[in-house]
Image (tube, rainbow, N blue to C red; front, side, top):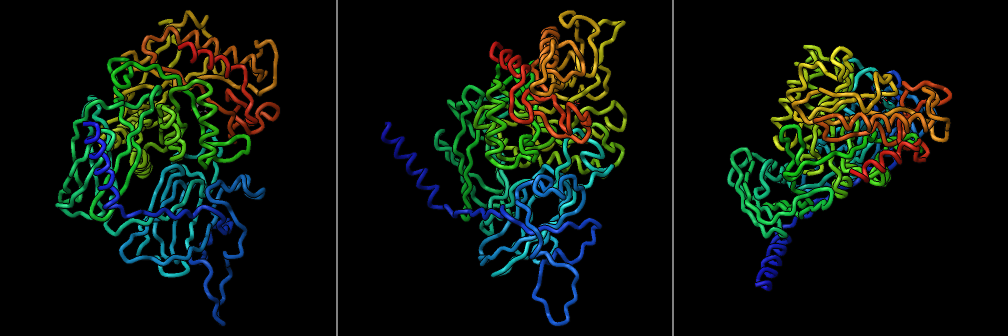
Length: 582
Ligand code: GCU
């Protein structure tokens, strides 16, 4: 019997190869020419340099311009760009021999904040939002030989942007994530969503989209380890569906982050990906992973390498941040306050870490502006589209610390509806800073007219830092969103590594004062009846233009459990021990 199974697996595997039409990913990372266009003159920089005729009179050139490395923020690369907010043009050549039976998709992992992309002088894409991926089919614009790609990047803060005019992190600008030219067959697999049923352990749902809206196309789906080989057929939108019963599936979890090789083939294309399968649900005031209640031992992380004052943008950066998070003993990370790189998400998934990803609807957003609403909806859809097959993603966050106003509630209702229409398999969340201690009722309460629409409620509360203690922490009662699972999505306080005192002086920035904040908050959290987890703010000190204390902050928000040089503070050990004992 065993021999027969082995033979079947070999045949299945062989079948994969029969259709293999290798896709190709050409990296466009590296040195790009760059021109600071401070007044947005938009001269012909889109076209790049051309052969100059005798009568050409152009007052611009980009080929001899200084270089910027991609991926990477511009602020950390050149002294004169340290605080630059404005437009910079990027440009580079690529020599190609385009093939007639291929398509060429130009993909940007992230451009902060607005991008306008040109190929050989023709605009092929515009995008708004620093943290979501976008791509354009540039087949028609490419030619044999030399091709010129130009990108106008602008990171100016605007009232109708997301985030808007002021936020507590550094406004890095630039092409901050990978740029790739994806070469695919002319008829290709353009999208797919393969996930375990929200509530069952024995049923996988698959949806596969082809590039052309043609009915009757065959799509084969293989999961060799489950001995699954499924034949699907597209409908007149070019979409194929399958519900696949499975047996003895090993569900992904922190203790065993199991991933399965999944392969899709059509007559012209083949894609394969490692995909994990798990259930994430809410039952009453509990969060269930694979049917079992889970306590979320979390941490917040910004996408930044503080030691080098720059955006994190490579796989090595992701590994550096996740090594520190894993050493702390987490099983969950809130990727604050925006979607982070593919590297962060895939590496966290391989390590069995649950993720809360969110869009940067952060505090004062122009909620009554419909174009801002449209941007937020698109940003959430882009966030979900990129990571929908990542089982580590369990929570989609739609807002952080927003006011309970009719405009905000209408904005979030529209956003939440769009999210649920895009993904029915995950939990939708938001972080609120509206919980307060009511002396008459002698307990923490929260008045908010939106939270009941969410699956899980996040509470940001800085007792001992932004607010004094109304009584001994162990005597403080909570009655906040008591019908929902409640995660303390932010708490903590600041300390500058290496400052020491006896811990009872607020504003000393001592490690002992920060450690005491942590001890007292953990005592208080023990009384929260619907608590499903905690998420200290934040793993590393991080850069923020709002942090102006010249002695202790020096442009850093120092709520990190780890200093900006990578040193663990006393509070790190308090959380480490707490997680070890949970
Ligand atoms: C807020 C906010 C964070 C900010 C933190 C702080 O809760 O969500 O982005 O950095 O407080 O004040 O340090």
